[in-house]
Image 1: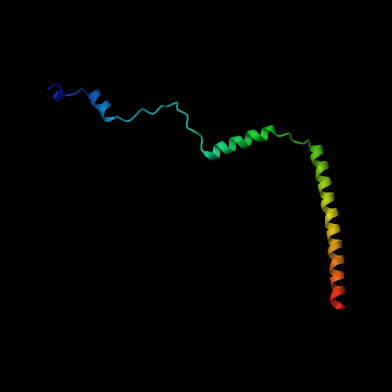
Image 2: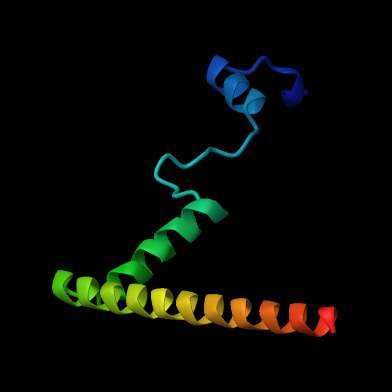
Length: 90
């Protein structure tokens, strides 16, 4: 018979909200993009960056090598095209 007695208002509210309480301070696991970004920034901080002087010097070396190779390949292309033209006319 005790089960038929009316319950107080707070007991009714507690019973209606049977959902588990969400912790306010619970930290969410960061998603993949955030984890990737943070790990990328962490790795970039470990990099030993060249000085401005070193970067300029190395850039000049690369440009000189590229220019030299362009001239050599252009010359070879010209010579081989002339050689093939001579073979075709024979």
